[in-house]
Amino acid sequence: MKNILVLGAGKIGALISGLLAESGDYRVQLADTREGAAAEVTNAHGLENIHAFVLDAGDKEKLAAYVAEHKPIAVVSSLPYFCNVTVAEVARDAGLHYFDLTEDVAVTAAVRKIAEGSNQAFAPQCGLAPGFISIAANELIQHFDTLKSVKLRVGALPQHPNNVLKYSLTWSTDGVINEYGNMCRAIVDGKETDVLPLEGLEQIEIDGKLYEAFNTSGGLGSLAETYGDKVVSMNYKTIRYPGHCEQMRLLMNGLKLNHDRGTLKRILENAVPQTLQDVVIIYAAVTGIQDGELREENYVNKVYPQVVAGRLWSAIQITTAAGICSVIDIVLSGTDKYTGFIAQEHFKLNDILNNRFGEFYAHGGTNLESAQLIASGKTGHQRISDGDRT
Image (cartoon, rainbow, N blue to C red; front, top):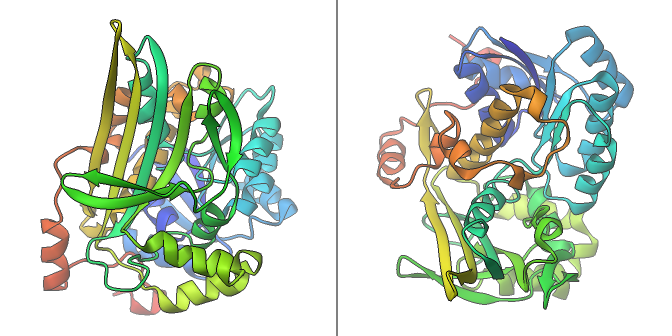
């Protein structure tokens, strides 16, 4: 078994650790700064090859000491984006492979610099967006002789919205606020530039249902750098139900909460519920010249909650964890091929989809299973405290 350190026992880290351990090929060390957080997850998994630790990964000296003692070959950060530079620095110093889920542009740039000349792989942005959406779009791009436009659209939405935001907190609140508040990279008229978040509002229809999409930060990953001189237009937008963008503009801009993100986080977490009944929409559209004709190709998929190891996991947990686990699996199965900074578009779509973890992206899912499990109270537990163990 390969020894893997997973940092962060939150919504995504819980499933990452479970998927890797369930495969039987990884011995997982799951660490979290909160006393008991990692243990709750490992108790629920009930596997012999996953172990819980209390560790403040934001303390560079403590993290370096931990790595020296426990000797993992790779570190996976499912921590908030602002923790990742420290983790990457420790990984470089200790000779570890590094993977993260960050959507933050500045953090990714810092990780790229840290990775220069490394004999190990440094693969940031490994989740859904950035991550899988870049891999899907890159596959379509290869089908064209010349490019006109590349559109990336992703949304994690409640199946049954019933609040004014038409939204549920399906993943990191810090990450959502970061995406909504930071400048966004795009290619406009052949030039890479910054565009404003919560702007560029458009309507998009998928399977007969109307959604809205608007600029958010980070989802483009490194695609703009890779294809900047080969495409006229490229952008990433987040998919939401109609009306969401207007409400977020009021909070972020009208009430100036983009400048008081701590208050905004408290408001959202106190008012917007979480749910396991979500759906992830993945949409990539590429327009260009094929065989002398202007054509468009699309990758469109909806992913619903799924059962893993007898428990129900939300669609955003499934897609994010499956994305990073498939990349980890591919890299660690052929480490001589992957060194230094690895952009997501380096990975081929078919390799991801045919991977044992990437198979969770298979088309054709429905919300029937999650609805039945919710109605019968048989979703299982993603966490079990020591006091609740039997």
